[in-house]
Length: 137
Image 1 (cartoon, rainbow, N blue to C red):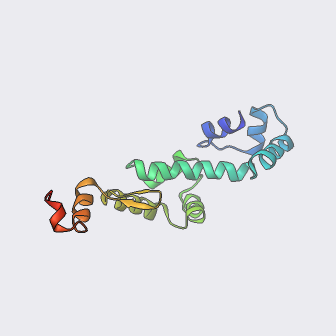
Image 2 (cartoon, rainbow, N blue to C red):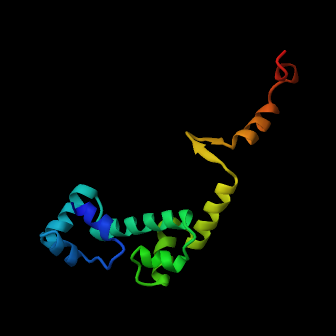
Image 3 (cartoon, one colour):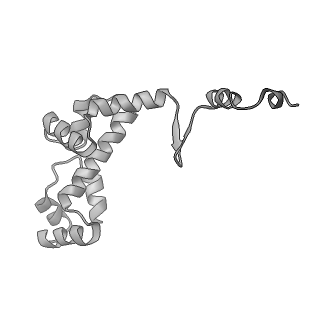
């Protein structure tokens, strides 16, 4: 119930006090729950949910970075950039561009192997098949 509350309200100005009140818990009980069950603080969990949602929106929509920051519950664009860079090591704009570049290559990572689209895969594979076997002989 606590996790669902955060997941459903992360775009709002969620405070520890407001969350505890909404869940009919004391602040200390809510803090203890997060430390004991999640291994992180309430604020750290809230932040991770917001960043995760932002990543999805950056790679899956054409929304502006400002709109995404507001939709994810950040109070300013500057705080969004600062938080995103701290969490991911890159800016939201660079993250989006990296996602677009990766999707253009049509590459997927499966168990450590790079899989390209089928036509490119066949062309690459054909380079390694001896010519005498490639025509069915």
